[in-house]
Amino acid sequence: MTQVQETIFVNGSIYTGASEPTSAAALVMRAGRISAIGDQQELLDAVGSQAKVVDMAGGLLSPGFRDSHIHAVYGGLGLAQCSLYEDETQEACAHSISEYARTHPELEWISGGGWNMDSFENGTPSRELLDRLSPDRPAYLIERGAHSAWVNSRALEAAGIDARTTDPADGVVGRYPDGSPNGMLYEGAMMLVGSLLPELTRADYDKALLDAQNYAFSLGITGWQDAIVGSYGGFADQFEIYDAADRNGTLLADVVGAQWWDRDRGIEQIDELVARREATHGNRFRTTSVKLMLDGVVEAKTASMIHPYRDGCGNHTDNHGLRFIDRETLLEAVVRLDALGFQPHFHALGDQAARDALDAVEAARRANGSTNTRPHVAHLQVLQHSDVQRFRELGVSANIQPLWACSTPKRDELLVPFLGEERVDLQWLYGGIQRSGANIAAGSDWPVSTPDPILGMHVAANRQLPLGVEGIPEVEPFLPAERIDLARLWDAYTSGSAYLAHQDHRTGSLRVGMDADLVVLDKNPFAADRQEIHTTEVKETYVQGRRVH
Image (tube, rainbow, N blue to C red):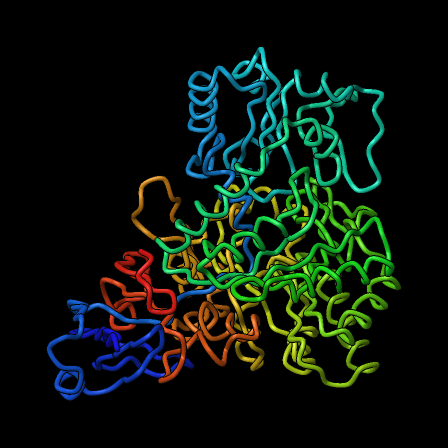
């Protein structure tokens, strides 16, 4: 009989989870599971000389991170396209686009994305600039938040968009004062051009998933919830991509797929969602959640608001944003989905959207009683204080994006006039949600923003971006009373997210018998100043005992 090798982690601290303090201990894993945690010398004596020893050199051993709101395949595709995610100025974006166009003469379209509204005057890049950068080919570049696209004249011509084009029901064509298109497409209008992009191949998608998985492993992420599995934004349905990778053994991360709720259809689509859930292989990929996108984003004034937006001069308007799913349909859908065992995963950036999500869960509770579907609401940029307590009362998790809980000069310039001062202090109320006792999970929305959990925790713990880093403006902490302590943030990325995935019995914390989903860090951030959290680096990542990074 072949003896299974044991691996022991020594000379570091361990964060087991559930906000317990870190301790100087050792951990042993065997056959993909945690077999012992305890005194280092006692465990070294117990495992014997054949065990593999991992010297943490004063670092920290933690449960592997989970990202509860990510678009991994889209992110993987972006790694191979014109990527502007690292560019924080107009000049840097222009250089990257120009270089990409120069080095890819074979492409019919220049496509990609990741540009930041903060990089451009009034948050809006011009059609004319993109015309200069790509004069002979159509260009389509999605904004970092994925709710708008920047296109050039060639792309507008290909789509037949001009001053006479009417806006689609779920989107807006950006225009100059004379009515001519300015190169910006918002929400559903993005597809007027996006639908014309050359189709990606199945091999492109398969590679994108594996590239995304490797990138996630490098950040200590061992599992995630993909927030859109279905046909969306001109991309292929990812169901077969994930399911095939699960079946052939290349999907090592543990993934929950949130099936896309088609807002142009109604309740009749539920039977299809059930069929797809039953069709999954069920080893590392499950489609047990349904994504309901309730609104847009504040920057585009499409997030659904209780009170209307103001105009750029601070005057009242009649624009409350967009409600993508009407209230009656939403309540009926969530009641039905909850009864069928689906987990509702809501996108809500505006306070009206957040309230609609909570109202829908409340309707499900009245109709179905207490279920184990573990609903969650993602983003929560603007939230009324009166709704904070409802998360705990209704058993709804807050799916936060910690990296967003800060301020920048350009963001203030773009948001404050349209929100009004009275709503500025209602943004990212993560501390209040923590104090309410609700479960908190964390995600990145990658490729909207970096999936780096360490950076996300740094921002939410400090309510500001790292200080002293070139290219990052130094601003005061944004609503410092809404900070979350590091232990709760760590739990949000581990046990809190494992809870959402219905995997908290096997991963998300370090307990004997649980899967050895682990990350080794170069230092113990719990023992350092919180302004230094972002300097922590991932050294190794393990999935079910297998070293993957």
